[in-house]
Image 1 (cartoon, rainbow, N blue to C red):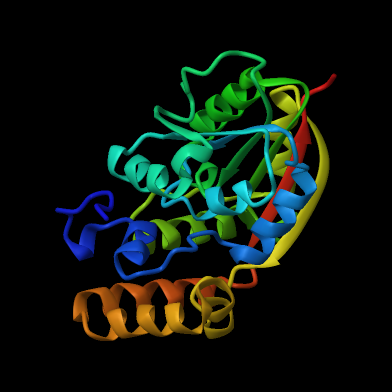
Image 2: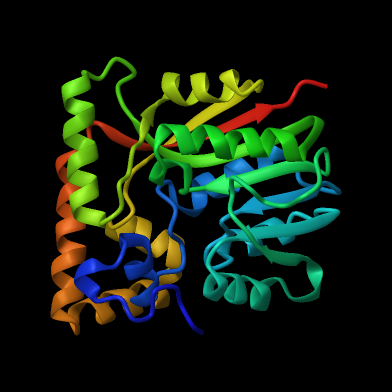
Length: 261
């Protein structure tokens, strides 16, 4: 399996692709638990589903288990797209494209799903991606996202900047998580109506979450791969320390938003 950025050094690799290189398959801030809740709330049975940036296809597998009418993945990285195609097989299709410019027809989907990707964009690019989801959805369609959230809702601007800077330095991506109110504002500005919000702890690298997400064997494999690679171990420990240091101000959020009928 050819992962994205195969030639990038461990020290410079974005955190989620480093986890993937080390054998981690669930790369979502709220883990499989929040993904399952989001997919249930999105009501996928019989729906034409589009997933933006499906990564390694872990959520695609879960989507297909919910019996959608059709599945389309839109992935910018060709290596990742190939991985997702191997997961989806003949049960759907995966196209190469940007989340903000999918190339899909307007009013062609009942549900658009995006996980752990809006957080990594500037606010302007977040708005572009949300606008594209709105364009692709049919009236009455649902946009389901699973992202990082800053908390509490009135967290001071200085704390926001501190968390964002720490995340960017640790995961090597210019992450810009928002508060629940800011996520809601972005969605409503695009024309959506927010129907549901739910939360989960940001416990990506905690033992209980690793086992819940990867299974015992998968978690042990990930830990073994971390221990045997000193550069990767330093990165992972740094990321875990960052998550723990800011755990009172970071969590995962699920939002279900609807395009008016």
